[in-house]
Amino acid sequence: MKKAGLTLAGVAVLGTAAVVGTTVVSGGDATPTTSVAAKKELGAQSGNAGQSERKNGQKCTDKRVARGKRHFAGTWTRWENRDPWTVSGWGPGTLNAATSYTVGHTVTISVGATVESINTVLGYQGNKQWQRSLGYTPTLKEKKHYRLDIGRAYKIYQFDVYEPTGRWMADLSGMGRSQCVGLHDVYVGKGKALWFWKLDHRLRVTPKKKR
Image (cartoon, rainbow, N blue to C red; front, side, top):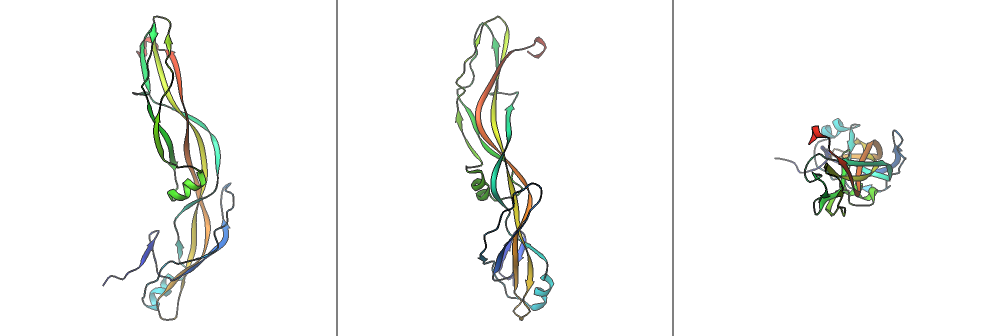
């Protein structure tokens, strides 16, 4: 018969409760962050003492989370050589771009952190799309072939990701229960998010070999 239990981050949780520690283990240039000190129910499952003893001292983890504050890491503009992000034509006259473009924020590196924790650190919804118009119609003054490129400009933000980590502690009472104790934040790495800033453009004369 299959025994019921709670699985957390790929590890079967066999204990009834665990105390969340307040010690921070960090790496790199991460800002130390203290976990919420609280008792956390992780579930329990009946079994034998031998199984509990075998788990004793092994690592147990909770879901990875983003903590602290976001860090500005510069700007970046994405240019794409395809429709609708590029338009070309002959002058004199005007060159009309698309009516609207799909733009938005995106999280490019999450390091496995939960969506909720990432959104909280960023202060906005990390993955979101909407429509935006360019609001620019170039005038082509000469009889030449022109090309208009439309780019998406972003502000880059980084954030720190941690993994609450503890150790299984065996219960030798004969009930076969184990507890995940001493949970504390272990630094995992940096995540990255792109916050949409604006639509950019560049107009240039197209060389003959690229027409």
